[in-house]
Length: 198
Image 1 (cartoon, helix red, strand yellow):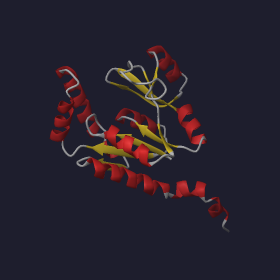
Image 2: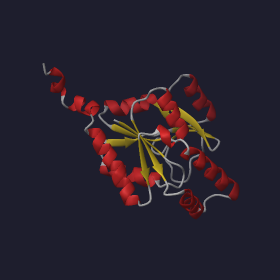
Image 3: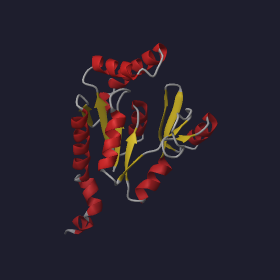
Image 4: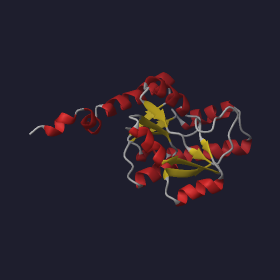
């Protein structure tokens, strides 16, 4: 099972994903490749695979990414071979991917369940972004404009979850995962005798 989760900065996506991973030990968070500089306490291979622009571009040329995107002047991509290696180990994949990446994945007809996390309103999103206080005015405006652009892509997703209450938003995402576990595509793998009925 592949669960794609997107949402603009400040929507609470990281908090939701962290709790979903705690609740579902058979899920693993996809580790993206990126050209951005590692932040304090980020670990190569755990948080991201940190690579040079040249290395990333070589992987792009070899078509090694399930998806890739340019975000805030950096490149991010999901290695298809990494995803497949985890699936061979029996793990489900949770992919934290932005709108550009989802467009690409859907363009390649990558199967999965696509979930978009929404803020309760644009005003609330502005407040959440401003509350962080981690960026200068220019960076803040860029992030806000990108967030507004991302919100326009809501029609690409199978499910929309509004984070007006973090506990409820986490429960909503968990409900979607629980429903997907019972989908016929998942159940066929778990109940092989179904295909043998004559």
